[in-house]
Length: 287
Image (cartoon, rainbow, N blue to C red; front, side):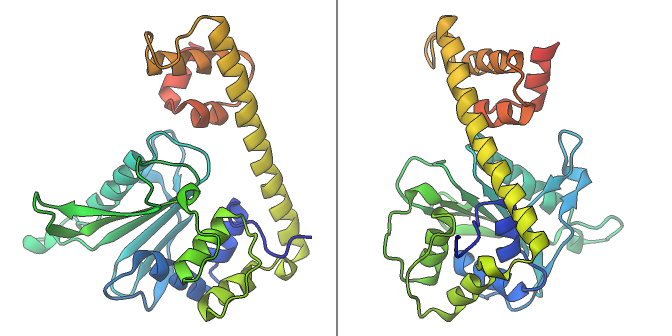
């Protein structure tokens, strides 16, 4: 039996890092990755669904959404499957949340006074070309001087992390995430030991074990479905003479593969994750 639950499952990640019973763990997690000039002291987990931001009739659900005592807002999203426009999506969500800050009816310059938002994207695929596994982005001018502190992005690409002997708190958290809960090192880091304690499998109730098993099986089934869909899509595409990434273009290839997978009866969400197409584009293939 595993010692720790898998933090790359929806249940595992939220139970460890977004558990309302253990706000200190969320604070430790965020402070480690954000490295703020003024660390988070107190925070409040916020309602995690925004109907005003949905694009496809479903609310936007973040893995962590919280605000600290300085009114700074923190958004964390864990993305396991490759998503072509994940970085663009992060920018979209942050801008939407910023645009909702000014209060209607407020008079004067204070109407546009914003409070900072920090977006932390933890992704299990490569989104940028270089080998850096942590990337921090904010607004700078042509001389790389910071011009605004309200929009902040941090991206962590798990696959690029190569350290097999993690020492610092942030390295140990990344190692723990990348290896899906497989952590056998002895560590004297008191904060990371608190994370490990929450993550221990034997701390789960029988109800939580049932939920975790269902979530883990769903994750494995999704991976298998994506791999199967990729094989079928590529095979059928080759049979039909699709020139992948060449004469007919990347978009045409994606549409052809999506059409093949629809014909095979694959779930729409699997097709979106595999091809990067939008819901509207998938629906147009059905018409």
